[in-house]
Length: 222
Image (cartoon, rainbow, N blue to C red):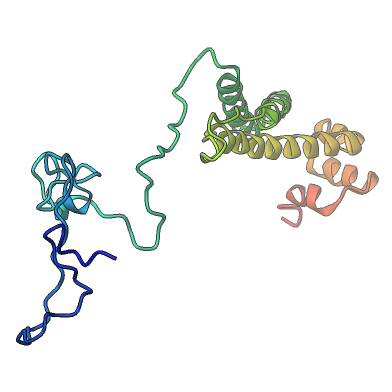
């Protein structure tokens, strides 16, 4: 077994020579790096592996303290994996075109309902619901990297908004059409009445509900 004397380097685990004075403890001197390598994982030009300088500065000279730090409660960004960017507006994309049509039809149906144009709100509401369901049923494009996050689909919130507005307009329109069909005789009698007494007679004859005929009794006791 070699004691280290042949190579000219003292074995740190060998006992001291006889009669040597006691020496205080000191850390072992690190072995000098090989050619082309730097200590602590630095590059030969003195840069850190992540692009930082040995003094804690970035390549552009800014210190690390000037860089925005991620919040402690959120996920830390992975420099090796970029987040997928949202798709840009493309008029030729059928999914984006269906989303725009759903939004326009839904808001138009809601406005027509507010202005009592139920004959117009009904087809617009059906169109908005059809476009919204088409967008929601469109499968997302598969990601190139199976470990990457799911692709962003900004059309889904817009389609849900169109589905909500179109559904609301459809419910109101159907309710109005149902009332007009069920109480058609009463409404015709009321529209053909000339005096207030004739209106009261129509309500009693056709047994109109109070929520439909309450506005007709205002001023009946005058």
